[in-house]
Image (cartoon, rainbow, N blue to C red; front, side, top):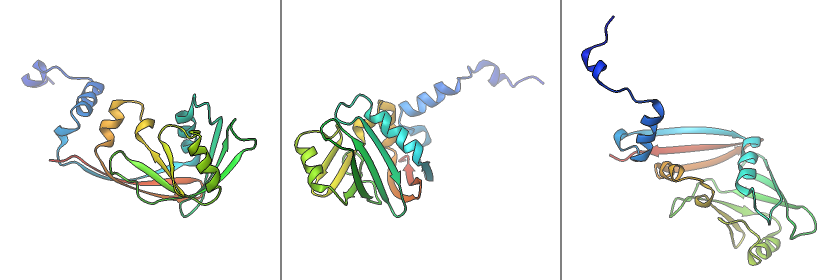
Length: 177
């Protein structure tokens, strides 16, 4: 069977070119697109992402997160700035803050004074700050490329919840018309 004349004269683009074009123009060709997604992320993937983000950081030599229920997590930190491993207990806020750059916030349930000392001595990695008893993680410094940042603009809201051993992100994405 012969292809229609139109198909014979049209250059067929590889998929990576098509996706590159869509990302490059902010998905404007898909105006009106809406996506509601629930993304379960196992604890080991969260820890791989943390390890990748902290690679090369001289103030934190190890970081391991354990995810519990009801948005409760524990973090084990090792730093050359302190004589023993640091065991933090956090309660994650359910909504990601999208004012300015996206930020994940958590209430520090223990060691608030130690956190303030770490903040004062600039021991916290770029993008992580302490405000009162709240740890604020600005996601922008952890996004390695402009393509990721362009995609993040499409995200309108993220709700975070946890179950034992995994985080669940309920994400709303919209391409404006």
